[in-house]
Length: 213
Image 1 (cartoon, rainbow, N blue to C red):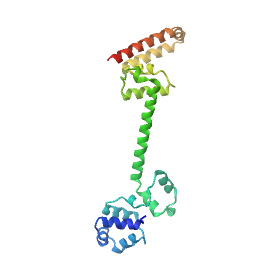
Image 2: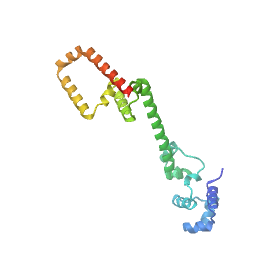
Image 3: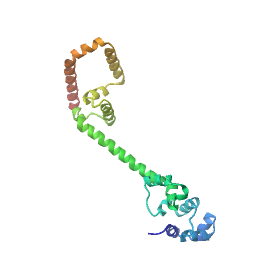
Image 4: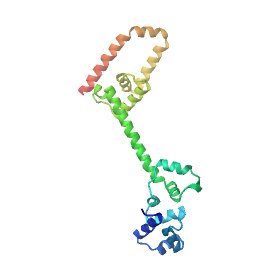
């Protein structure tokens, strides 16, 4: 495996540049290039950044290995005096590494979200129950309530989400008024079976209507 200095030399040669030309660009002595490429000394990180601009490369391409997020965290915890030159480069020029890791993490989260939605649809048979007449936002809204309410019936939740904003307000106001009077609760309990049968019948009718469209 090539050393850091050898990679610097190769980068210069790939650009067809002489040491004197690079030294003039950087405002340093040609012997500095010789020392860097021979591995006698290392350029400061500021000079290295300028070198990489001249060569059109990333400082990370000069490292002996690829660094992951956990590596960067470990390096950051070390005192500066205990970090190797390569570790300091990885830390100082870590933005591309972090961008790549963030992209991977976002992809993982999106895949997990899609699988959670798919599992919800399989468990509730929601699309089949409503003829597939739901967009992504509607499905996610129903799922959010389904999860928050401990698996409440998806039919009821969908019916509620299908209401307009004004109708939702009216429905909730009516429900609040009913429940605020304890005398209504017994009457509601007495009529629960009839109400449940009526609701299911209406939902079945709505489902058939949607499926026939």
